[in-house]
Length: 397
Image 1 (tube, rainbow, N blue to C red):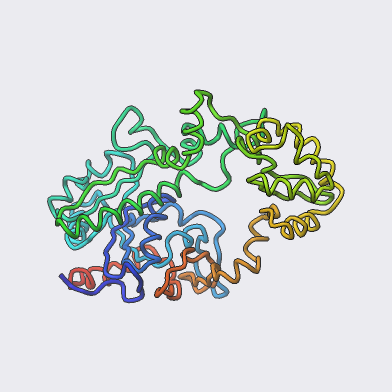
Image 2: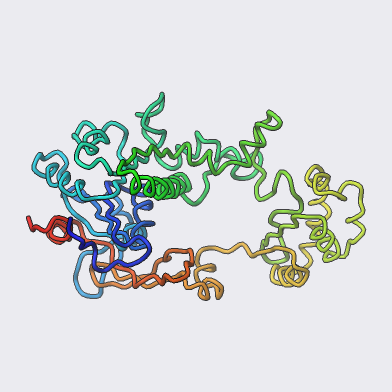
């Protein structure tokens, strides 16, 4: 097997070959986690337009006349290569199977059953490469009553219970502003693949991973599901408040909102002192964490008028002085220009295929002995057809 992979990629996963049959968010995000750490991720796209996210705005044009390029697409497809194949064409399917024969991992997020009809299901490709780790990401899993049901992030947030605990009490349902169904599934998929990769290297046998958005969202809802299992009552939405802690929410200051999290008795005593009401710390309604949570409507009614007497920045300075966890309510413009984010080195330059230079968030975890190289541009559709065949198979075709 040729040793050459993507020559532009280095990192802990260098040498790992990933085929991504991914579109929009969940599959491409999982693939990007591998690409950021050095794996050679080859994105397989249909020749007529490719991944639908290529058309998502904002579309950034270069100064010279050239096609505009999607910033959304770039954010989850940097550091990858693109091969354009028509999966309904027998010759292209045969070419894909050649790549599968030397791949380590395949990630796909087609609707269950689609790839099997094309001769590209797990059993089909295991016959080509028994060591292949084949990860299927879908809304509801590969089997069961909902398996064939269409799924997008918002619909899975709804069915998974996320929307029932998001937003203000009594208000209309709202989704989490970040597409957590897609991205949690991508994280679970990548984690599971790496776990199975060790097993495959030792045994020579791959696996089929069935990763659902529904299961992933229930997995990260551990506190809410355990609350229900413990008391047989479904959790409800509480805005920014917490069912087991108080004061632990956003408050309105004289000019803006800010958030505090007094997560234990000592921190609560500091908050009571900060607002000039130290006697509240000894009030029988508020002496323990459980009591404060139980009586938080009374607690908020007492604190809210005090917080309106100063600006948010003044309260944040006071809470920081007292070591009470607190934060401003930032928008993304605020946090992306924050000095701590700059210190962490999270914002990276990213050149688009049309020559325009934008920014992106790099791999957000610091790993000793690994310095992420310069971001490679997201690929133009089909830009790497010849290079990938040459690198992986030692042949141009």
